[in-house]
Every structure is written in C-alpha cells, then in structure tokens.
Image (cartoon, rainbow, N blue to C red; front, side, top):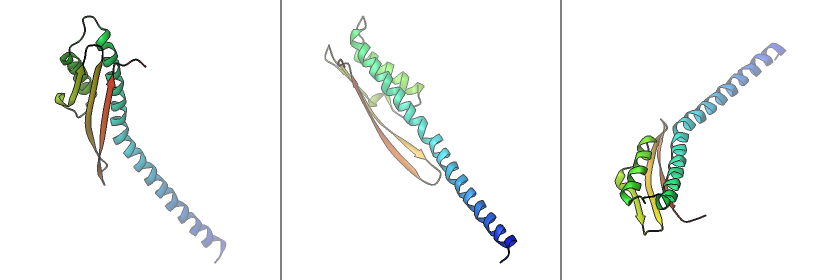
Length: 127
C-alpha cells in the first residue's frame, strides 16, 4: 500500500465520522425543539399558579374559587397547555388557597412517541 492509497482511506473514515456527528447533533436539536417548549410552558404555568395562589387571599376583594380557576385557565390557553378547565382544581378555606393541575403532553419525535405527565400544585402558604 502506497501513501496515496493510505490517505484516501483515511479521508473516507473522516467523512463517515462527520456524517454520524451531524446526524446525532441534528437529532438532538430536533428533539430539543419538540420537547423544550412544553417544559418551558410548564415552568411558566407553575409560576403563574404560585402567583395566583399567593395573591388570591391577599387581594381585595378576595377572589372566588371560580375567579382563580378562570385566571389559571386563561394562562393555560395562552401557553397552549393541553389541559381542560375541569382539570384545574382550586380549594379555599378562607386563609389558604390550593391550586392543582394534572395534564399530559405527547411528544412526537418522528421515530417514536412518548407521553409525559405533569403534576402541578401550589398553595398560598408562606415560605
């Protein structure tokens, strides 16, 4: 084997490694584009629920359970979270407001699908 044949063989191996790396990185980017928005929306919804629970008892006049549910549902719609108004559970005993929401998101990654369950719960207890 002369030097020219050796170099050509080396170049072919580098092309395959480069293609594999591009495919892997592309797949990771595709999965991130599909998955990250749902987790970010979940984080924003959790923050909105926390704020709503804290201010529901301190607002004047105090919000009713239905007002709190309606405010959370507006945020659910704004964030395009796949939850129904009936899924939002709000309880109040005067000084404590508790809000919980369970929903699931199905991720379609072209070659596979999986469903992630989200369980959110916030209340107006002091930190």
